[in-house]
Image (cartoon, rainbow, N blue to C red; front, top):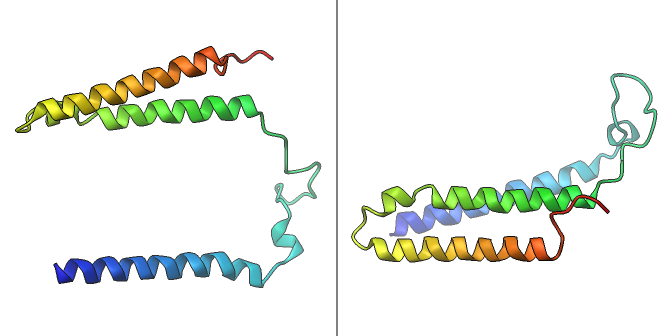
Length: 116
């Protein structure tokens, strides 16, 4: 148990140090050339900050949520072989019910319609 605690503490501390270094190190040396967009050796023709469609963003987030559902339900056939499969089935059905409710909400709020 102590080895697990030491490993967890070491990994957490090392992760915090690496993230801190990665966050602060680029801010020490700011060059105009490094912060400008690169377009095959030519000067930039336009702005690299193009507007992003909010509808596309919402559709992408909705897709990610339903893709996550597939990832969570994928181990279900193996979970049925456990000693208490009813608990796993209840959790799976509640997840499906929650996501179905989310889909119905998106549909009623017209979040899935692309036209303006």
